[in-house]
Image (cartoon, rainbow, N blue to C red):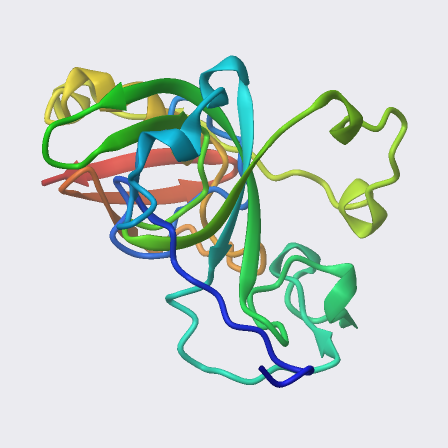
Length: 227
């Protein structure tokens, strides 16, 4: 193996309700109501690989930015949370445009389910991942991962934009009951890019097999259709 290169194996894939990148929470843990499944690839379906995992409440997932098709990277990037105009060093951000397109997410372990056809499946909460995302590794979240008074860089200075959600009950009922709280949590995070604030513009994204349409004006997000 070349000393400057590394080879990885995909050990699992995440199956979520997001079929595109738009509206996925900006970080893991922001919408705890989101439930996804992590299904292992062979030969990693061996239950011995997971012995003791159920004793942990949270996990770290290392995964690939599989939907990042542009390729390449730059020393600086323009974080959307800074309006898309200010440049920061790539290693001072969580931008997907990196020398190695690897993402990191902290998720809640909800259940370890033994299945006949998919092996042992992990049900996870709060994941910020698109359907089909390949996973490179799983590590347990432990006490030493908690750092009190940690500085958050520019993210501490950026106002966290949230929206007051208005969704007619008749529209919300078009989603399965177990998906409704997650959708409202996603919308409350205001999934629009930070530099967009056009009250006339209608946005849309796929979630749980439905198309969600909405507009935002003066901090109030109104769902216009679910179909």
